[in-house]
Image (cartoon, rainbow, N blue to C red; front, side, top):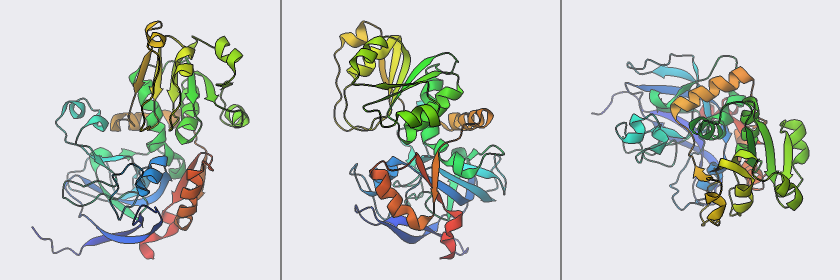
Length: 358
């Protein structure tokens, strides 16, 4: 049925083509449905995935595209059947805004594995309209895909937790690796890797950052609080630490050998792959068989885990290292992110950029 209500619009910054250059773009928002929440965006983290999507690196980009899936905002309107939120609440939205609600993963409350999941942007919603992300003044999202931000947490600090944070929390939670006293390794120290150090330390783990060079040693140990730093080409130390890790979280997003990590794992140790790599990785099978070791991967986290993770980070005082920028700096931020020139996550101050008043 047609609505007599004037069409609601918002302004975001969109890429128009694979150059990935973002510029202001005004587009319609759907009316708030029965279980929808209208959110005024406060800030949005910048993830490496945003860079891949705006530049069509994965070959699946649709334009115009407003990226952003680490969104924190304020509820300004709720549908009549919304029970979880009220106007004025501070809330978050992550990578997903929809799922089928009746498959095995959905029934098990791990909707991130639903084959019909709907991405926060570069996807098509149930109404046939494109989804657009958090580099925008406002979003309309079903209450199932909205989380409450615990009181006292600053929006800018929370933003990276909604993707990078839950991406680390989910495998540690699922594989029973939350207990204190475990020995963990974090391979790669970017946005996800830095959250790995912070969250694993907050769980009481002994955390070693594993890297190909010593250039991040000082910040890993002194800034992030890692317990040890291991250079993967240092044969003597690799030998010394063989068979000693309960898990290694591998965040490296490019092709790299798996054998060095596998040799570090103890009996029943787990190598958890987090980087999106589009070429085959390889290993020799005895490395797995002779220690009953496991190579696995997980994908972001469920809405339930996201809420749990936020409560955990509040309780433990986990604070990510961020650089806050305005929207008119976002193209420069993307260029710097492509060169890994950020410690460790850009967060766009959307509310302070006055998008809907341009």
